[in-house]
Length: 208
Image: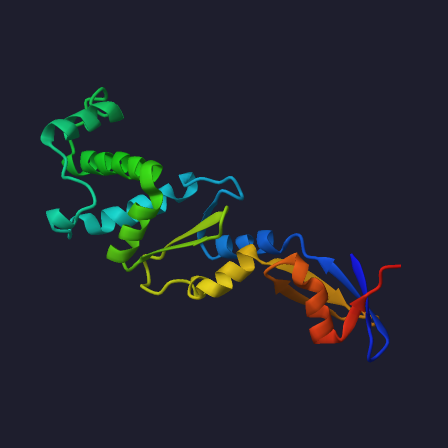
């Protein structure tokens, strides 16, 4: 916490870092059904796989072969998928549609492991009910994935890239006056705090 003095009104201002802003914002995204994958949070795509696979299977039958991200499966590959699934051992009758979904599920997992951005960006461009946004800086990234099959409108939280970057990468603070009134603000860098406080509040830091 830092203490500042408003040089005009002679009032004390306390500034503290909001350590939970990003976590709270991610909770807000997830509350809207948006999957969050990040190297900051050390999360992977496992929780988003079901949505990704459904979004792909929704459109694959309508794609021309040349537009499909993956090549079409051979009959031999489908039979192998059926065997690997265990259905053959249960004497279940071969289901081509189900075997095909197994095949594409394997393809999707491999594509995400190899180049998640390329595949998810492609899927977002072909399925209007699927939204993929990636936000990154020099060292960190957040992949935001939303499958919204009941509407072709993405969440308002994903519309503004600048707002996403601000919420996920800025340093966030609270400033509180002597009456207990509190305001939240963000800066691209902690080093800008003194300048911000002087320009907005005519306040300088009290160092003693």
